[in-house]
Image (cartoon, rainbow over all chains, first blue to last red; front, side):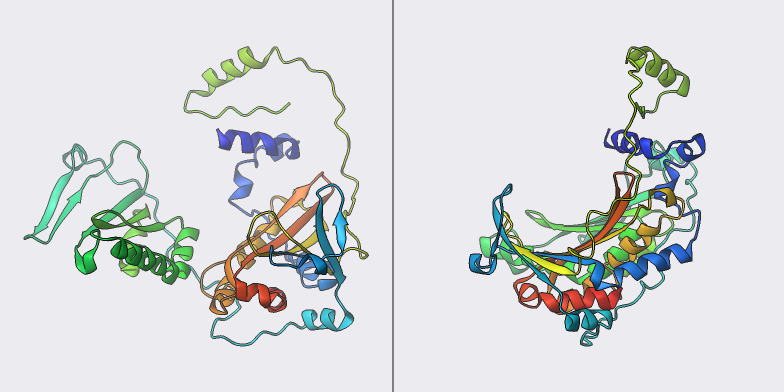
Length: 228
Length: 147
């Protein structure tokens, strides 16, 4: 329903039949490349004279916020950038911290094939136990022949009692922090994946660590491999 | 009135529903006001400055906001999408990664929108850490450096 509402909201902007034919498409595809238009936008964004900065924090002292907003009833301050500050921003420099400020690198996780795999009732009727490693791991596979999407899901559950996993409050705190660190450590990589419509999620459950990947059949194996 | 029907029924069936269910909506021939005359909500007197305020939520943020000419008619070129993608990027070489390395930011978003048929805007919003709040001028530097 949200999708129908968002399209209806945009329709007044798409007045002619030619416009309406682009209603769905324009969000995903830039049919025209207009470098001069992009340059004109950069010129606006790079100019601090045309920028309004809003800094919000509860820690700002009332005494430093001399103006009172009568309708919303809050205090604020306004301060013009000085000439010196404007010049600093026009030629902004930042200390090198090892992280480059540059264009994103090429994304090698983008799927190239969107073919639907041929139907195979022997694999899609019910989950198949494909392989077992004695006492260590089971590998299950269930093919989907119903939804006809070029996509798959890979799930991996690690059952462990290491470091008291799942047995104490301390261990739960530890694994929760560990999981957040893992997510942060993989942030740049999973963002690239997200741009290629691949997702990775890890969660710590009661007695297992649950890893899940979703995405296109074509790019998923590489994605799972690179994550691990 | 604009109507969207979205479903997995046949087009004939949905057209039939659209007609039978919505034909009764009266056309009042309302003249929609023309708001397309360029109108800039901010000018040089109130841009090029910083406003500081206490929010209701206990969350430290900094937002950089620019006013642009109306971009909606350029939807085939999607110019603002380039900037929301690049400035809002969170992978290698991104502004967010730089700010995180400095312990200044928790998250960052960037995007534009078009308003009232007459103007567009673009903003970059960074959720600050305590260190980022103390060094907010350096956060502004980094945004301009990236641009």
